[in-house]
Length: 264
Image 1 (cartoon, rainbow, N blue to C red):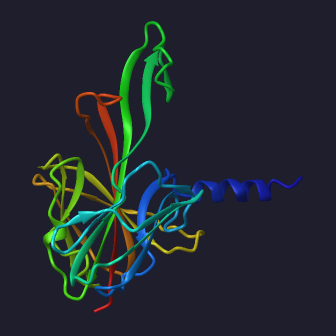
Image 2 (image 1 turned 90 degrees about the vertical axis):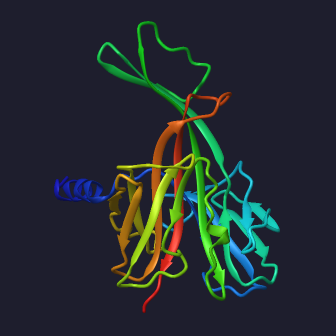
Image 3 (image 1 turned 30 degrees about the vertical axis):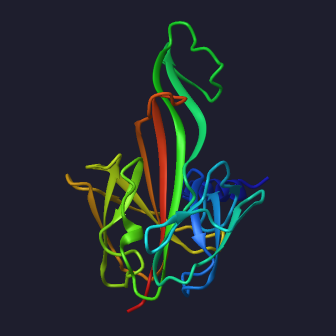
């Protein structure tokens, strides 16, 4: 057998980016009216927005332009995605859609005799003599903003808890050639030197461009240059303290925001 096909396959594998399943919440359309019925997909995927694993075990939340929060009309969970539908109440302005928090598996890793071990089973005892190196529970939340009419800011108000991307530039007022400014914070405090991945979503299931990585400054601020139009996903991963009574001392947070950049 010729080695050429084998070598080609190996090179192709090496060319693929090593990415974990990432949560997302994506609307069927960013164009909405005050009385539109909005449809969104929530899933975990490696290419965006091609659903692979359903986003489950959370309570979806809609924040209206006046700040009122409520559940969407319908959430249908399938194998690869959750389909969310809700009819807007007739208000003009910006709406915030959130998956809510999804608590996932508890992870532990340890070192023993120069080797690393890991377990996702809380009942598995730590091996004798091992040194625990990490112990956390995954927590995922994905969000998107949609605007009917002119953008408003009430729905952009930070929660003040958990991992957040707080927009400075309105996420529904982004145009090629400008910038998207935002702040990353945890429990209401800025996160300096925090990595943020920006993924361009092509949606073809084949070509996922490599992400652009930004780093927040000392005040937790970051700026993304809007060089191309299209739909994007901002991904933040941060391991922070969990509240008392949680299944692990830390949360492995995964936060994503879907946004669109328009042509001027």
